[in-house]
Amino acid sequence: MSESTTKTNLLGMSPEKLGDFFETIGEKRFRSTQVLKWIHQFGVDNFDDMTNISKVLRQKLTDAAEIREPEVIMQKTSKDGTRKWVIKTEGGSSVEMVLIPDGDRRTLCVSSQVGCSLDCSFCSTGKQGFNRNLTAAEIIGQLRIAIKSYGPFDPSGDRRVSNVVLMGMGEPLMNFNNVVDAIKLMMEDNAYGLSKRRVTLSTAGVVPAIDKLGEETDVSLAVSLHAPNDELRNQLVPVNQRYPISELIDACNRYLSKLSDKRVITIEYTLMAGVNDQPEHARQLVKLLRKLPSKLNLIPFNPFPNSGYERPSDEAIDTFKQIMVRGGVLTTVRRTRGDDVDAACGQLVGQVEDRTRRSAKYIALQDVTPGASAAE
Image (cartoon, rainbow, N blue to C red; front, top):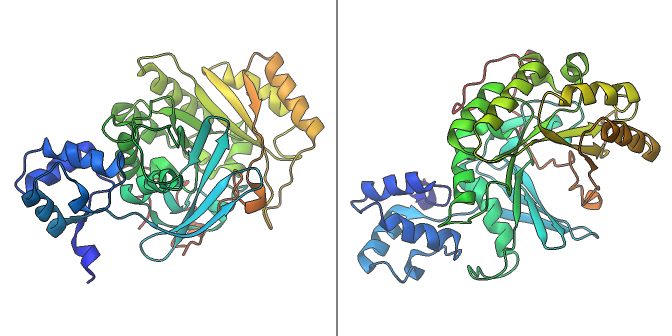
C-alpha cells in the first residue's frame, strides 16, 4: 500500500468533519479553522508552510494527513477563452471540468461522478456509463485547480472563480454526502466564501434527495427538465419513470419554501430538432412553469458522435423562446461556449470504465436513498 493511501486527505473535509479529525489526533476543534484557511484560502499543500500553527501540530498532521488534489492530465483552451481540464481520479478513470469566462464573471462547471448512471439519451456523459462517485476531495479539488491556474493563491485579490455550477459529469444528488461536503466548503467563509446565489446544483430530478438537500443547505437549484410532459421526458430522462414531472415540481416548490430569501428554480431545457422544440411543446411548458417560480434556460443541442439528435434551426429556437416570453416566463438562450474543445453543455465525456447494468434500467427504476452510493 502506498504512503498516500494510509493518510487522511484533508482537502474534501467539511468544517465539521475537519473538526472531528482534529479531535482524533488529540487536538482542539478550533485549531482546524487555521488549517482550513491554509488549505482553501492560501492553497497550501505542505503542513510545514502553515506558519501560525505549532511545530508539534505540523508534525502530527504530516504523520497522519495529506492535502492531495486530483491529477491534471490535460488542459485545453477554446478560442472563446473557455478552459477545459481532464483530471485523473482514483482507479484510473478521468473526468472533465470547464471554466467559462464572461467579463468579470468566471463560472466553473464541476463534475460530481465518474460518468453518470441516469443515461439521459441526449448527453454524451451518460453514454459513457458509470464508474463511481467522486470523493469530496475530488470535487472541491476542481475548484482549487481552477483557482491555481491563475497563479499563486491571493486571499485579498480578485475572485478568480466567481460562480460554481455542479452541472458537469454525473448527477450530483446521487453522490449526496460528498457533494454536500464540497458545497459547504465552497460557501464557508473560512474557505472559498461563495454566496448561496453563486453556487448552483443541477439535478435531473431525484425527488427524495431534493427534499434532503433542503435540510442541509440553501444552495441555488437548477433542474434539467428537457420535456414538458411525462411521455416525452420518460424517453429523454429515464429517471422520470421513477419521479414524474408533477412530483418533481412539488419537490422544487418545497425546496423554495425552505429558503430565507426569494429565489427561483432555474429550468434547463435542451432543444433538439423535431423532438422537443415544437410550438406545442413550448405552450405545454408555459402551462407547466406557471406552477413553479422559475426562469428558463434554453440550451440548443450540442452535437456529439452517434447521438441521433440535431440542433434546431435558429428560427425554431427563436420561435420557442418567443412563445415562452409571451407566456410570462423569463427565458434566456444559452450561448454555446467551448464547443471547439468539446467543453459545451452535454459534451463532457472523460474516460469511464462503465460498471452499470444498462439492461436493468439501472438507476431509473430504483429508489434513491440520500447519502447512499448510487452504484459500487
